[in-house]
Image (cartoon, rainbow, N blue to C red):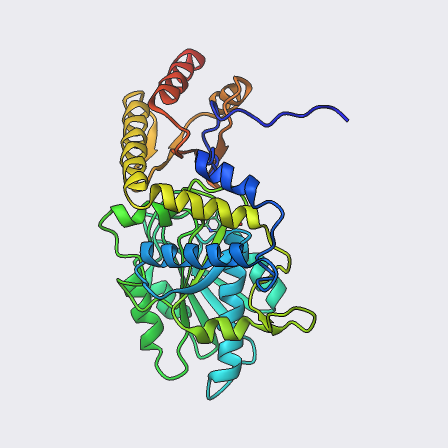
Length: 361
Ligand SMILES: *Cc1c(COP(=O)(O)O)cnc(C)c1O
């Protein structure tokens, strides 16, 4: 077998993952051979997992959060849909026949997987002129079979934050058997605490949230976060586990990576909150710098609200930049998309802009 080497990060501009914090790397290696899915056997990693959930709860405005470290945002989003479906089935006066989930069209594609696996209907509704959930469209789509309304806090393509308190009001106005509210902060969760956005459990009656340590949290992959306000949510996900000492399991996967959990614990321990704040401020300044540099060159830029920007550039230039080794990607509309993750430095962006100049000629 060929000796493969991982890519360097020095030209990676469109990934939502990053070089992990050194403490996270070290902790992940130490806990490689542990399985938090079997907490009665692997007790120390289970204790670390409880610490991670508490820290994520603090970050997301929910001091006594329930939840666990998932394999990623996809699993956490699937679990949010599953919990809402199961709770509606078991708790509502009238159980829905064909449960549906209402989400803005900016929602991550993991919700399509959730809908497919769980047999629920995904209703995506238009966004407004600034790529945020359109409240009247959401309101018009919610009906008596809607089990979940989804808001995104930091969209994958444009880094936009949906109006979470207003979405909560839409869910609650439905009255009686009302939909649950899920916030997908998989990417944005580690930046939003340092902004004025109203996105968290503290700002609105949010039921569940996705917030991933393995993205801006600088943890090691795989480390996603699933958080819930009520224990009833975890109960709705739990199944009996006959051959384990622990009696039930709420996760979707069985055996899980202790490396992911330990990496998340170490990253949070090292960086929350000051390290994350400093990183956010630096990354945000970098995103604004790049937005200005591209706008100065006559390109149309979608302003960064979080450290993520999109920009219309010609196809030929996009291809030339890829050929020059830049790991860049496009939005569905075809714009160049740059995510200023912690490994993205001003120096890297200067080299990128130099290449934009030389390859535009
Ligand atoms: C990345 C992302 C996801 C999916 O997370 P994975 O860890 O890749 O499974 C879900 N939602 C949003 C908003 C994301 O940015």
